[in-house]
Length: 123
Image 1: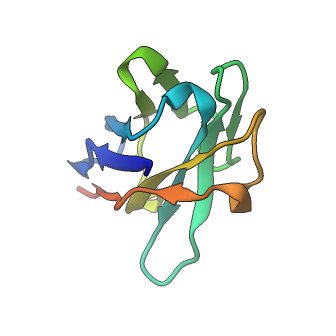
Image 2: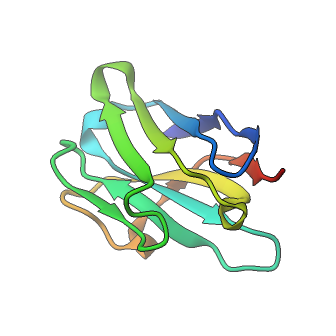
């Protein structure tokens, strides 16, 4: 059973940075594309960024392009989301998810989910 555990969330001032981590266990990370999603109170969940199983392809939502960077270390079974120039609009619970597919799966193809980590951007 694949398990994903997010960490690294917290309270940060506008313009600040955070790095989220997604630790994967129960299988080899190499087989999975990984994505980060977020959900703010009263809003629908949205895809933020994704990375292919090899790490060779990445995708970003327009709202985070140029500010967020996704990366993975398969040897450590961990995926990261570096978030810079944070804005109050980035406040949400962030989830990582996995899909046993090649390339960059569609947002609704992710099957395995973590419990999430809260990110709050406020002065």
